[in-house]
Length: 255
Image (cartoon, rainbow, N blue to C red):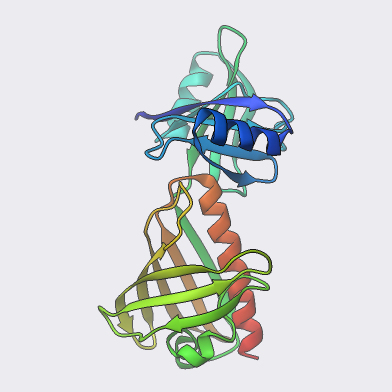
């Protein structure tokens, strides 16, 4: 059991001013996050802080966040010590398992462990051969791949083990960006694995591995998607939402 990082939390809804101050004046990277919290830090993340509105779940502001590698063990120790649990141990939808506890000084501490792996399952009304082909045929892939309203502008793509790929993506607003990687396994029609990296990464991005498994199901194919590992809950949430929308587009494409 250990502590991974400690991060102060500043209560504020002045997000634009905070980005300008912590990026331009202090010199921290980042400033992205969710609609209620921004994350700042140095490139190697040895220093971090958050600017956040009132916590959307707990309805109390945590003064400090402490990320640990076993939040359940810390929770058990806090209860054994009769510490005041301000917010119970909870799995949050943005990819963390956490609780709030009050320390002897009255400060509220957010003790958290973030999920490092996106795991999604979806049953599609098409046989495994058809679903697998939609992932490895470039002409099919460009018609459905990406979150809602994203488009594939260009792709260099040959689904062969050891081969590299590159996609040029256009979001509904903003500039194009590029995703690339290498195919690690191409086992038709049951398994596909590849690395995943942004050419223009966020400060908290790192290369991940996407593994797709295609299983026969009564009504077609059960697709199982795993992607790991993520450095922050914000990036986990971004990819979880992106893959959820992407699989919904695939479902419509296969009809």
